[in-house]
Structures are given as structure tokens and as C-alpha cells.
Image 1 (cartoon, one colour):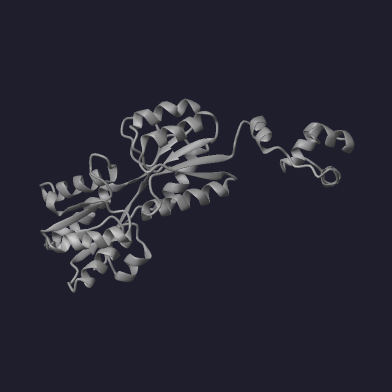
Image 2: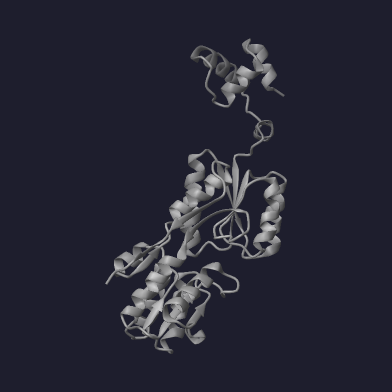
Length: 311
């Protein structure tokens, strides 16, 4: 089997020079590069990617753990991570977890065995402390505020925009405000932030009867609309513009006038509906997460979110 030493011997150049050509490095003249490439073509040589990764100590791969594909938050965040990784020459392995700790630990063990140079958790079920324990094997990045725990993090600062949104709602006299959240607050940092902001602005916790748990897709929005219509809220705070559109579809299908709604992520549906929203700037979060996972940056990177009011 042809190897790099055969190419060096036939071309008359050193193994180091051949390696620079194979890895598209600088400091090789055009004449030398052409000579070596001609030998490579003659021998029909294909470099061993695994051996090359081992030799340079990198896989040029990033693992991205995500619980679901359907929620717009994960769709946009994963797309931005992929674009940022490709721009830096990295491949991305999507690792669906379905919020199962056994799968999350399996992905971490793969990371421990150097399957990835870094691993990004867009969300997780395992405790943050358990994720942080794997940092000795490389960058472990989370997409939430880790508080006092020392772990790399890229996330949006949700509290100011959430409070601005609920202040806007309160100032307009809405009182029966329904909340749509992805998971129960004890499981979701996003849900806790929403409930905390509501409580701060209105001076009391939200009515549990007006909370819909399990908002991940437009279809979930339609189901929520059927449920919420019976409770007659005068405002619905949703966790995505697309999900809000599903709620509206449900109301209209029932022959009912939809209440005023607010979405999140500043999606096309929200702009077309003229609906207020919160933009968490996930493109910037994705870029920051990749910078942390590749070691280009360290620590934690907080991105400011933005409340967008549309009257």
C-alpha cells in the first residue's frame, strides 16, 4: 500500500515537504507542489484521514447535542453553529438526545475517546456539574448561563428582554396572560426565565392554569390553541413566532377571534403577522459556541437579546 514515504522517495523531496503539500500548507514552491502532486496522481494515493487526525492531534469535528429538531430555537441555533464551524474548517456531528441522560453520557464518552475536538450542548438533561466533569478532555460548551459553575458557555441574556416584554404587556392593560413554555420550569432554564420575568413585572407568579407546557412546533401551537381558547386569555406569550402562528390557526379554525400574542426568535411568520417578538440573536450565539468549542476563545460569552415591539 502506498504511503507518504513512497511519495517522498519517488519525488525526491522530504516527508515533511510532502506532508505540507497533502495538508495544503504554505512554504512550498509551485514547482515542488506540482511535482509532488503529479506523483500523488500517478500512485492514486489517498491520505488516511484517521492517521492524519492522530498526527495533528485534532479530528476537525465538533459534536452538537440537541434534544429536538422541530423547535425553531434549535433549528436556527444548529444552522448557525454549522455555518460557523464550516467557515473554520470543522465538520459538525449532530447528536440527537431526546433529553435522555443515557444518550448524553454516551456522547460525552465518545468525546472522551477523542471523537470530537469539542462538544456543544444546545440543551441537556444531565446536571451541568456532570457535563463540566468532562472538560479535562477538551472544550465542553453549554448554551445557557451556567451561573457560578466554571464551564464554557455561549448564551443570550434573556432577563432584560423578557422583563421589557412583560412590561409592555402590562402597560397595555392585559391581565389574563397565558404562557407557552417548552418544558416545566424545573427542567428548563428558558421556562424559568420566562416565569421569573413575569413574576417580577406583575408582582405575582403566573396562574398555573394559564401555562401550556410542551411548545416545540407549529402543531403544538395548534393543540395549545384548542386548550387555551376555553380559558379565554386576553394575551398569549408564546415561545416562537411559528408556534404563535399555530395558535392563531387553531383559533380561526374554531371560528374565534385570536387574542393578542407575542412570539420569539423574530421569524418571518412574526414579521408577516406584525407581531411583537424577542430576538435572541442565535446566529451570534452559534458563532460564539463554535469559537469556544474550537478553543479560539475561552470562558463565557453573553449575547444581548432584544425585545421588538410591534403595535
